[in-house]
Amino acid sequence: MSISQLDLNLLVVLDTVLAERSVVRAARRLHVTPSAVSNALARLRAALDDPLVARSGRGIVPTPRAAELAPTLARALRELDQAVTGGGFDPASTTREFTLAIADSGQLVRVPRLALLLGKEMPRARLRVVGIDTLLSSGGLGGSEVDVAIAALPEKAPGIHMIPLYREHTVLVARRDHPRVGARISKAELASLRHVDVEVAPGKGYRDLPASYARLGIERDVALVVPSFTAAAAIVAATDFVATVPASLVKVLGERFGIRAFVAPVGRLTVKIKLAWHERTDHDPAMRKFREVILRARPGHAHRY
Image (cartoon, rainbow, N blue to C red; front, side, top):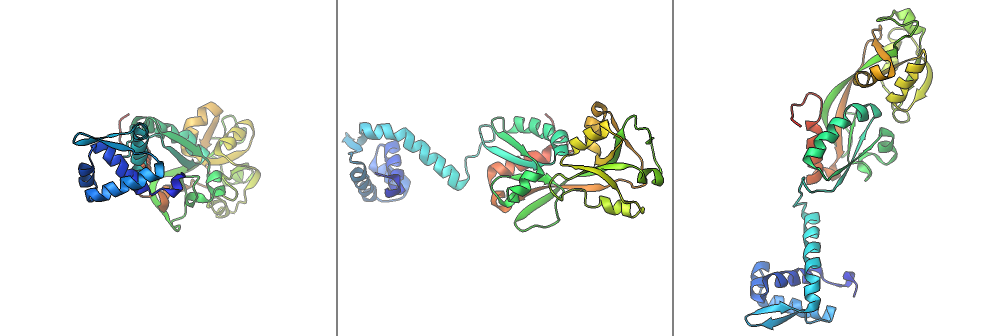
C-alpha cells in the first residue's frame, strides 16, 4: 500500500495506542471515544494486513510488525508536527542552513564576526554566504535561494521586511607610493586620475558617485569596472588608478594590499546598510533566531563572545 492511499490520522491513533498500551487511555488523550479508536485500528489492520495489537490482561501489546513500526512512526509524526507548527526549534541542536547575501566587502569585514557568534548560538547550523549578484539572479528574497540580505536596498519593496543595520562610509584610495597622490589632492589633480569602478551586480554600483563628481564639474575617467571591492583594491595596489571603496575594507586590507585613503574635494558617501528578508520567512523560528544573531553581530552592538 502507498502512503498516499492511507489516512494519516490512523497513524496518529496507532502511535497513541502503542504509547498508552490502552484503547481507553488513547481515546482520552485523543479526545475521542474508545469506539472511535477501535474503528481506526480496524481500518488500519485491514490496510496493513496485520493485527497490530493484541489483548494482554487489562492492556494490549503490539505485534512484531507494530513493534518494528513504533519508533519510526513516533519519530516521523514528531518531525511532521514540528514542521507544521514550527514548534520544537532548538538553536543548540538545529542543523539548518542559512543563506546570507552580502557584498564581498561585508564578507571580509562583517561575516567573520557573525560566524563567530553563530557558532556560539547555533553550533550545528550551517552558514552559506553568497554575493549580491546571486541574490538578484535567483529571484531576490522572494525566491527560495536566499534567506536574508545585508545590503544598500530601496526604502520599500513588496513583501520585504527591512530594518537599518549600520552606516557604511566610502573613501577614495590609491596605492601607498602613488606618484601623484599625497595626503590630499586638489580638484584639478582629482580630475586627472583614472578610476576603477565597482559593480557588485550588473548596474549595481554606488548610485550617488557620478553625481558627486558632476557637482565638481568632473567626469570620472573609468579605466575598468570590476564586480568586487576586493578586486578594485588589488588593482589599485598594482596601478596608478584610484577607487571608491568602503572605509571598513581599507581598515582590513589597507596594510596588506599597500593602499591608503586620501582626502579629495569629492568627499565621501554615506551608505545605509539594511537587513532584509521576505514575508515567507518572517514567522519561521529558526530564521527569527538567525536575524537576531545578525543584529547582535552588527558593528557597535555590545555583546560577549
